[in-house]
Image (cartoon, rainbow over all chains, first blue to last red; front, side, top):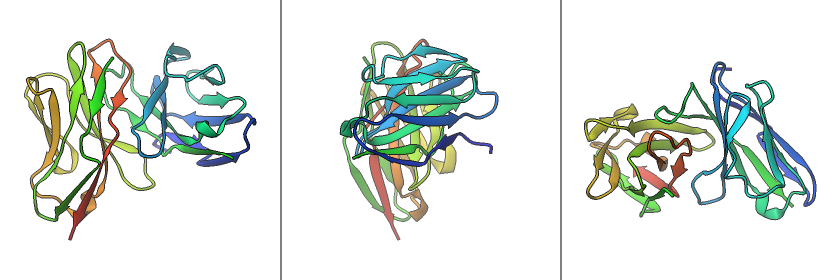
Length: 115
Length: 114
């Protein structure tokens, strides 16, 4: 497709389980972001990739969260030992080149529910 | 650190009336300002941005926003609202050219009644 694709769209898991969320950015976009959106709040920055490397991971809340982008395209957000407080919509966005003046293109998000 | 405030959780207007969604920001450097819209079950969509130049910027779907440096505001406006403008609107800011982290406000739900 032409847009940013995120899978799964919905994920329900039990506390303590491991979860992977996938993002397929727009072809050719070198910048990729992960955000988290909790109910009633704006998106909260998690991590930014430029190419294969994480240029800024300062938003990851703790060491249970990790993200990779091994070939500079698809990215996976990994959450270990999930907690109920991790429940949120996880948004992925991409942009062409350096994103500091350009718009971000967002996917529809992956809704994570931790029971 | 940069931050954004959207003082109104909800804005309700009648179709055909002007629409304003308020946003104020705080940055240490020069602000790069954005508005995004989120329709139900859809991803965030870019509306417009201010980087430099004319304080009044025009964007998609007839929206515009005015950058006011003295009031640190970037209010979103539309002269004549449509029912289809009903959505969740987010203001966002970057702290200058070297900041890649886009910080969002909490959002304002706009309802346009027919």
